[in-house]
Image (cartoon, rainbow, N blue to C red; front, side, top):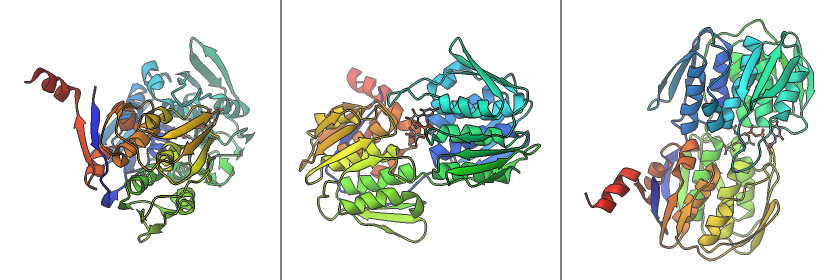
Length: 430
Ligand code: EPZ
């Protein structure tokens, strides 16, 4: 299996550029289904999840051209095939479920395999279905698929029990072509929601209030093509800043929007790390001394992002004192604790809370990641640890980070990517 060999203990220094946001481009690629005109998306990162979403659209009959080097993606969704993407694709990636809203709006019927749960939780879709049902859709679950149909979506007033990002996105996309006006309350307010709304409005939609808890969508007769630039990936920016901090280095991340990183900056300041703005689109984090323990609680935006919780826990494993991590968004997002513990971290998990007693150092160990952000957390721990770490489960990392190890090496990290072919050759001595 492909794995990384990390020689830890090297402070990372220098400048590194952040890619476009995975969690912005996936719904925006799905939104391209809403028009038969060309949709050109700039800044699309070369990720396994992007490749999967492209396959989903192609399985629906869209023509997709993607240039990974330039990040330019072009979609033309002609007359869509029957609304049923390949089951294996939807099972591979939950975000494939984001074609639900567009297909229902366009085809008035949809058949989608239930998105699997994953390592971090059961990931239900009840809020998606409840919102769309309020707009006049009817759903049934047959042979593991969600079958939906409608005589035509109507605007509705919808209150989400939880500010679900995916449900907000599916409902918002469907409402752009509904008859009448939809009010979506207790909506998710993540920056990726705003980016999707901006893209939809550039296609002729009428979305007002994205980024707040109440979004108004006035249905229109049809949408046109557009050209849209994806926002920077705030989770990747945070991951890179934390890589600088945990290694005692000094890292500047470019193409990062300070506004999107306020929760992380506030928590790092509490731990004794000042993250300063470098111009309007770069941030710098330098760790001058061992950080102080803090208490962290993940919340929907604008709270601290659950997608940075594992990476921040790595920092806490090396901080002075004992802190707590409370994961309120997902029910099972502490898989990285097992790997950190193998490296000498002192962490006790009690339900949705982890008590982290910081240690002066971690030691390298053979590790296997089991989810995307957990893989990032273990990679950061390997960079900070004394000695060598072998990190397996790289497929998880490559779902959400493009060439992360190369960019870390450009900051001085000592990382070797051992592919399965190389490993076989090393073992057979050829
Ligand atoms: C999006 O997932 C992100 N993925 C996740 O990023 C992120 O962690 C999450 O939002 C929260 O911010 C993408 O954007 C592709 P949710 P999503 O619906 O939409 C419950 C990463 O690492 N819920 O906001 O699936 C659910 O169980 C990934 O990049 C329901 O109960 O998240 C969870 O506990 C991981 N019913 C909570 O809401 C529903 O119908 C948050 O889920 C939907 C969700």
